[in-house]
Length: 379
Image (spheres, rainbow, N blue to C red):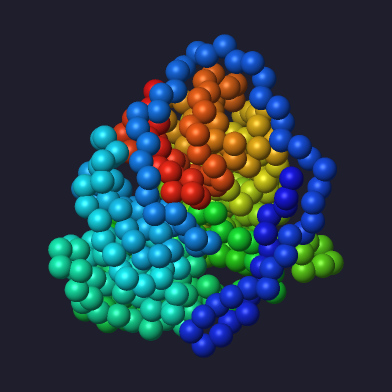
């Protein structure tokens, strides 16, 4: 199995690249799947072809019954969430570095020249552009009157949705080595709060439109003698349940913090770049070896650990109905019981290279692979 891709950021005036290498090959083969007595059946409701990702983070964006999926060539498909048909499409006619966001009849994207573009969804006309300090590292986030971006050089900026006027900007210094993202690090909550995971192992909460930092907390601190050992990036979206904000770091810890002041409620040793999810009964995360863990949301006590999917390139688990769903790199979707972690259902999706966490809307999970196949999975 190949280890996570590590990058050394080289910041140029408008572009950010990375001199990168694999840490090396280790002798772990994917854990063979064991025969399973299906307790909960998984069904593929539909599959659709969408623009294929080309090296960037092209997660789907949901808006009014449609999933908007962009590709690196600038083409964007709008897929009906109920039947998988292509209801609309859009073409920026230029290369993109990450996925799109939509608000107020505008579609937002970052091109490969380090510009944030806002275009009218109906006419395709560009309404405004903003030159960034680097290309986008992830899709824009929208909330309230702001569209928020994070560039490859660590700069977070917010712009007025209608005019493109910059509302605020904040630079987060990057360490010498950073971990390749598989999910966004920014997350807008409501219309007024921005959650930010950083490459320095920290979690920060901002007032969205003013850019004022409400609090910052350390998820994991760098340890070890080498730069590689000291990588502790929070490379997945933090999660919020109305009371606490939780995050997990690569080569670090998983922890939850009080939403109002940022005081640490608990933290446990766990290394993950795949992300986490939570509900009233648990905080769930996939470790970098593919094992899936569950923690008590109040105390952090370990509830269970599932090792049957180790080294299978597993996504973060997400809640689907009364179960948890995780998809592995061979295209198998697995249902786990949130009570004890037992695998209770499985289905093969015929997808490849799935690394982004599934998007759940109601009782359907949407899985996007790297080759441009979007699958709707339901119970």
